Length: 455
Ligand code: ACO
Image (tube, rainbow, N blue to C red; front, top):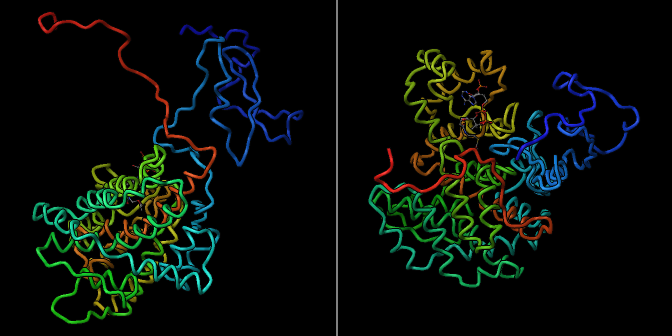
């Protein structure tokens, strides 16, 4: 549509872009005054919670039939797409709270299942509620036997995340009531099933990929103890997890339980917004987590450390990072512009784990990378710090988890977060089916030509 150039512009043409002026008459109001220099009209947009509603921009038009302004924000770097009461991150200060509780306190005092309850229900459980919750989760860990056959059908070297995406989606076909997403009871039942069955799916996927027989859940063990049992039990009649490793895994699960609006949570909310059953939405979230820029990063960290090979080759690798040839995996974060608080806790867990397993030889390379990066201007000026994935892979490797299971170890605990975010989205009256806009930059209208007429 033709737009009048600066029609009715009231002098703001002279103002250099980005100049900040103070208007005493409007100071103190929770609004934003915007002047459209195409028309000279000024609009007052409401400010709520440090945001302006993007829909309010639609009133800014050059003519009555103009569509109105939109905001342009590829990858949502500055767009809040929901209100949420679950997780709070202050990326500049390096703070992470679940439902108001600091991650450091939860990691020290809580268990993963207690944190999962907190995230899903909004409050810490009483003793009775906790016992009932643990009982429910423990008694929903078994899979339908057909799931085993489905898992066996994959190629011998299938990646466990590929199997997990498919099998968690397939679970929906076993629970037809899962479609009743606005029935609170049905919703709660699927949430329990998903949190309970994810470790079983993940462990079966791993056992299938190494040609080992499946190990059924053991109800005497804790959530993480049972997971270790299903992964690693061999011929022993009763698997007894090492308590230090069991607790370390539990804390790692706490650290991964939710992380507000990241790529996989967005997938969960976006797919869930068209109202499929939660298994289908979790499958989408797992798929989003699979990528190396998200849940696949700790696998990539380990591969990177192996590729570097020794401490003396670290400066050369840093050089390649600075030249833009490679990324320093496990560094940087969209939100944290400070040390990721989870990475701090993980570093402490690493010491406890290495006391049991022996020191991981790749640790020295990781520490050297961190030391050099934290004093190099490239990383300092871009505020690139170690994220949760930088050390978690080393711990997992020392605990004998195969590299391919690393993203799976992320997906299991994150299921609680995905489900809480999904339910919050469903019950939020402001939410609808997710449907962003685009700026079309393709060809204008043109007529079809037969193949003979094409150059
Ligand atoms: N190594 C080297 N340079 C980096 C890195 C890195 N790991 N991360 C960011 N940068 C640089 C970019 O090149 C860019 O530099 P420029 O301004 O000169 O172009 C600048 O820092 C900003 O980077 P963006 O890509 O714009 O940052 P974004 O917020 O989009 O990316 C991300 C965040 C994807 C996590 C990125 O830091 C990255 O790729 N890190 C490595 C992968 C990783 O560890 N992912 C795990 C994230 S945590 C999680 O999902 C649990």
